[in-house]
Amino acid sequence: MKADGQMVIVHELSELRAVRDELRHYLESRRLPADVTYALLTCVHEACTNALRHAGSPRGVRASVAIGSKEIVATVRDYGAGLGVGPPPGAAGDPDSESGRGLVLMAALMDRVEFCVDHGTQVKLHKLLAVRPVRHDRAA
Image (tube, rainbow, N blue to C red; front, side, top):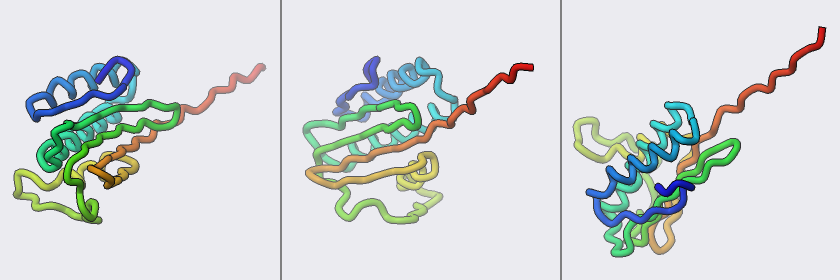
């Protein structure tokens, strides 16, 4: 992830570790809570892995992160075959399988996950940021 959270392009699974490290550095530099950083790292990695394994796009996978005052939105986009009918609602995956639980994991860790299938697949991962209460000091 670039210093400003802008897009990176990944073509191989072997590149994901470096992208994860860059994303971790970017998120930690923004002093986000550890649980938010963990959730984003896990879900962006999972979405990129799914796209690289299943999309078959020669243009690679594009990932970006936008940090707002109330939420963080990570976007993972490929230009491959697409998901078809979208993620299976409530799919639990086989607990003994080596794979197949990524969509469930993303749904559990994010506040909202959106899928758009149009000339590939775009996954938007939304994580709300806790609003810190405003302190008002009372004059005695």
